[in-house]
Image 1 (cartoon, rainbow, N blue to C red):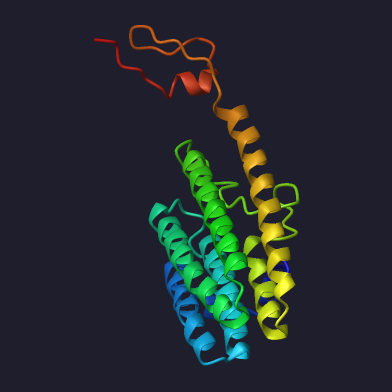
Image 2 (image 1 turned 90 degrees about the vertical axis):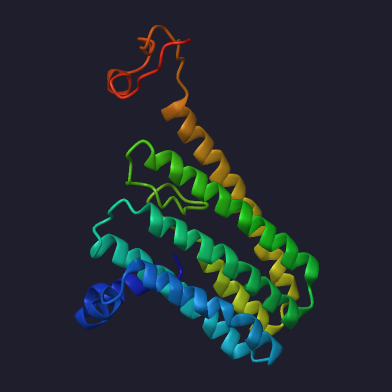
Length: 231
């Protein structure tokens, strides 16, 4: 992650920064980041491109703080409420960012395509997380990789906000279409990897008998599933 890797390094090196971040819950960081996104259209209306860029950068940091608190302070507790809130706030905020970008660069088609791709990626992410959580698997729930192997995060979707800020600061409209292309690649890779992973884990041949599951299932899975008898 462009911002995440050096920022995590600073957090680990500075006890003061770590204490400040841990003073809030992951949900509180999510709401702060959401508030920053809500202000992006106002910055666009006032034609304050620098403020717009700072708001996006601030949201990126809040998103990292959210994950840091979740791992370090809350110890990765399974928190469906927090996951839901984080996804919904980011999804709502993305619409405000798209509008602000349109006001700056006057590129409606690029903004519509980018916003649509972002929502598709968000849908993918939430569906994948649900599939993992119902299996009792918290590890790997993040699953934000794009062109890298799992647990090797070279590029995160949130990092694209930095390029969005650059596009606005430099009035570089073509960069928006490059961002759209990157989002297409992200979606394809995520969809392909998740499909293969879920098929490997969940694609089983099940035959219903009188209240049991087929012996074709692994022993661990058979003990967890009970199928009611047919009426």
